[in-house]
Amino acid sequence: MTKLAVLLLTLMAALAAVAQTTTLSADTTLSPAERSMAQANRLIEKNPKNFEAYNVLALALSRRARETSDVIFYAQAEEVLKKSFEISPGNFDGERIHVWLLLGKHEFAAAREEARKLNKTMPDDVMVYGFLTDANIELGNYKDSAQLMLDLRPGNLPGLTRAAYLRELSGDLDGSVELMNMAYQSTPPSEGEDRAWILSQIGHSQLMSGKINDADNTLQQALALFPGYHYALGNLAKVRIEQKRYEDAVNLLQQRYDAAAHAENLYDLAEALELLGHADQAKNAFEEFETKSRLESVRADNSNRELIFFYADHAHLPAKALEVAQTEYARRHDVFTLDAYAWALHVNGRDTEARTQIAAALAVGLRDAKLLRHAGEIALSTGDRAAAERYLLDSTKMNAPGSSQARELLASLSAPTKN
Image (tube, rainbow, N blue to C red):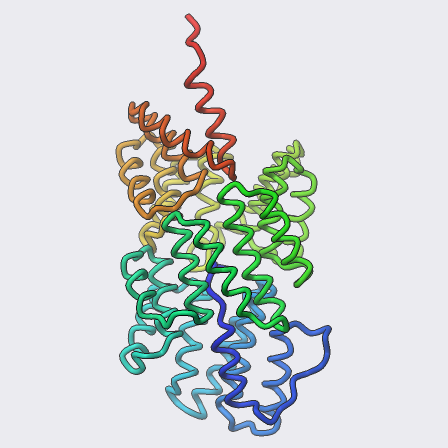
């Protein structure tokens, strides 16, 4: 599941358009998405020819996919959307939701093309611009994304969350948190999952900037709003790892994997088990991860980046790491794929090429301790000790995930040479 901005604005508009006379369910045991699903189904029962009600249901199902990290809801949303188009072929809201579903399935190139078509039809639609931004970011077209963000109306929720992510990617972590806080203040208290999602992103940015205690508090708030929320669990586990509370991290990641049994979630669990010293359990988890990851490797929604690092850092199969990296690099050139590709080249001894790719990743501006540590190791392998020390020092100063390994390597470089 990719990190994409909230669709609250669109959902609320859709509900307002088709449900003015319908009372929302008062059942507080239902999530926001489940309440929207129930409402849409009531509207469909009342009028099976109401294509807008099918659109609302499709959007609610996609929102449920985000709540649960269960991709089956995307498939259900696609089926519902077909009914909308049967009643009203090519209706704009349905086409817009179709683009959202493509993004949810990580079919970024297709989503960008469909969003471009919609943009020509409705050039002032803020969500279509947002979708173009999402697709371009995931494909690595950051300059296009920045221009699109300038075209978004200021102050709207989708614009705020996307602008926040762009600030994070450009290295302005404090600015990212500031915009996310604005989005949080603008989100109604009744939208618990949306607010938990925003808090999860704030916690992630705080963790990236080394503000471990702040991240801890923020992520605890997210879980209080939406208990068991998979995004918050994953980020809080990273906090626990930085605090060297490895058993707590394993418990959180096990809870997340039990709720969302995705390969990438299993990879994180395996790494935490390894840190805890449970070698046999970690080995079994890594083996299961590899099997699951290979099965989905040909799909757009895959765990290829985790698979690259598994082969490079755990299985020590550099040729396989590079094979997967080349496949993913052919699909997209976002900063995280560039980093993984550079690392795969590095472990295969192709450090000149690796340095070109890591330089492209660094040029985006992202302040990520792990990325900087990779840049340091690659620079060192090319004989550029000065650049290596600079990158490693930058990584250690962040006190974030990846800093401890950079600190160890930097210390080894400073240690006196034994004769």
